Image (cartoon, rainbow, N blue to C red):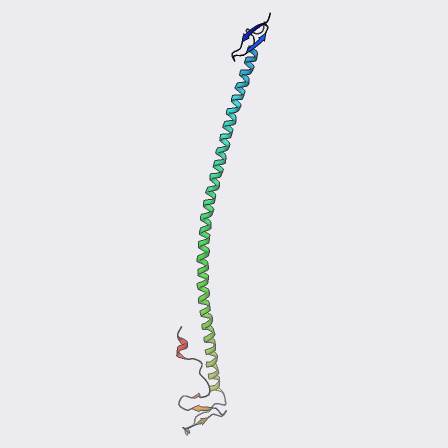
Length: 166
C-alpha cells in the first residue's frame, strides 16, 4: 500500500516503507541537506575568496598610489635640480662671454703694445742726438716724431684708461 508522508521541507514524497529507512524520504532529505551544506560552504568560501581578492586589489592599488607619490616627489626634485643646474650653466656662460671679450680686448691691446715696442726697437727709429730741431723731427723711416714723448704721431695708441673699466 502507498502512503503519503510529509517531508521536513513541507512537500510530500511518495514511497513504500523499506527495511533500510526508518522513515520514508529521509535519504533524499539527507542528500538535500548535504547539498545545501556544500552550497552554503561554497558560497562562504566564494565570499571569502572575493573579499581576499578585493583586499589584495586594494593593497595593490594603495601600493601603486604610494609609488606615484614617490615618483612625483623624485620628479620634482630632479626638475628643481635641472632648473638650478641650468641657471648655474647660464651664469657661467655669461661669465665666460665676459671673459672671452676681455681676453679679446687684452689680446688686441697686447698686439698694439707689441707693435709699438717693435717700432721703437726697429732700426728705422730716430735716435736723438744732442742737437734736436724742436719744430719737426723725422725718423729715418720718414715718420713725424714728437720729441717729448718719443711716440710716433701717426701711430695710434689702442689702449686707453676707459678700456680698463669692466
